[in-house]
Length: 256
Image (tube, rainbow, N blue to C red; front, side, top):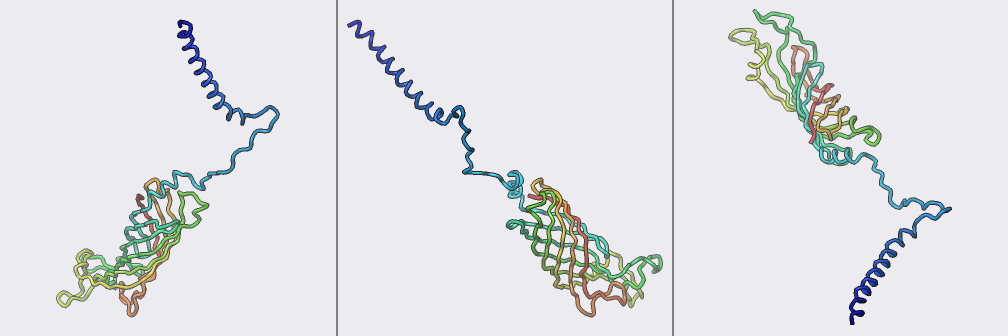
């Protein structure tokens, strides 16, 4: 009886070691089956799936997250300085919705103070101050997106431009005092407004990656805003019949 009792643990231990050996062989067998044998060529690389993104993943992720741009516009033209705001919303691919409004003066000749009205220096024969405020809604298309870096994004744009034209007095005949000069801010109390439909085309570029959160842009805009006859006069005898023209725009904005 003692012999039987002492042999039972040994019997179970033998079965346990046998099972462990079989398991080890099953685990090692698939690995050793693919091992390189001396003299054989190494197995070919698996080319069933190849992943090679056209652009860095971080850039694509940034572009997806930052679809909007809001910018302040500084405008330069032959009529003087102006300012405005622009909004861009990327729709799909390289196509972007564009909206901007800009406020700037409008004249068709050089206007320098070359006379005196009492103690006040004035521009001779100037009768009105004229301003334009086009509200542009259109589309912007990015060029060469597949070949240029994200930090330089040239584009073309076009849109319709309903425009508010503001006419304020400068020098007018007043029955009570004769020729009267209207100061700049005072003249807005006598403003007359006119609405005209126009259009805009533009070419420019955004500099800086929108994924970084800031954008610097330059744009050359051409407006056509027909007013019609007889036009509006800034200088007497020189009516303006089209309030369009070329403007250079510098944009400083943020992206999100």
